[in-house]
Length: 560
Image (cartoon, rainbow, N blue to C red; front, side):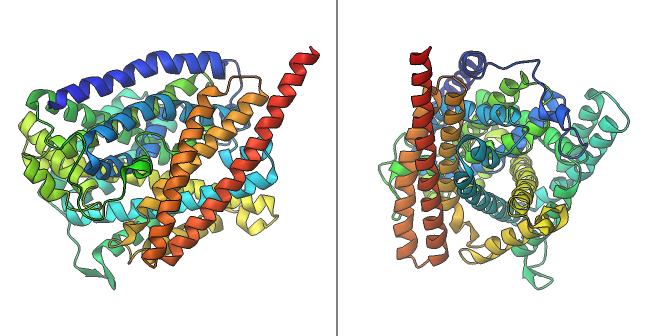
């Protein structure tokens, strides 16, 4: 099959979904009001609450939610064949992710910029909030640990990505200064920043940076993980306008350019999808497609982490409520496009079926390396660029998005710890420094302690990350449904996705629980059970509140 057909069908579905379905949801369900005062204006503080140009905010939101997950998940899931992955990415993006992301953003904006965890108290109750925040914290813990490990492995496997990955920090600081301190319009800083960023990729390609096998007593991947969390600690304490916003914005631009180059290369090269539509020859140890497909592809279809970003940082920067559709739905659509690119790179980037089968020899064989290798071959063949530069471009893309997700993830963990400090009256936890330090130390503990150590077996937590991510998305849709019901609005468009996600992810959680126990991974068994209990508890309390709200609505109509 020609890869062009998948490009046309996939991107066409995303465009139509944004034009028609997102407009219906924005106008008929959320009823976005341009005159509503957003928290960015009502609570403006110059640090977290900052009214932001919607293009800059889209860049922040898009790159924060994108990360490496829409690459890693689809790049692993194609081992079952390209068709299941393609269908879930397309339908999940259009009918699940858009309303989830925009809904979390809208509900937070309507409630002082509160996170989805804090919003649960208002909508459901205090006990549900406490349990929900445990699930959220554990997800953020896994997100940050997994992405740090992914970046470290990319630095080791593709040393040409090191220089541009760190140079972008200086570029972002320059953009933040010119926009917010000098008042320079967005166009020229953007152009100059992109030129500098791509120049740094050329430099990185010419001057790869390789660490010694042991640095300061740590193996190279472990040292990179440690350095990344030192950076994340500093970055999460800076005002959003200084680094987080401009870094995400410039990364968003380079992602759009990178995706554009990739899809143009597909159109010019017209590669064949050599992987089977449904793989009849699965290697030993590959888990069943159902229900594992829907937790392996987390980001890229629907992701609970998106709701955390939307209600955690994005809602505090939204200038106008009408921008909910532009930022929320379009951010989800961009994520779907990245997942589509990952599917194409990992199924059409290999010369023959035998080459593809030679790479996908186990369930863990895919991931970012398959995306970089296959996508680099397509870019090189379609655009006439050197193969190593095509691989550098995609490796840098993966690194930058994983890093921006870490920036946002650590900041969100800090918010949660500070909220706990306020809730349980522990003043020490309300400070930014200590709360950030606790978040970073917890992430390091998981990155170094789960599955064999940082940069080696640490990705053993990926399946549990995917399951927790999807469970959180389902719970977010349920809380949003309760809020919609109490606001007198229709809930079918959130309840149907919730029911599907909850069913699939609870099944996956039980499957993984048995696997972890059989493998002797008792720490993961503990996390699995904790997440399972908290999820079921939150779901039961939310469903009870939903039934009560529905009963009150019926009585109100009958009384009227």
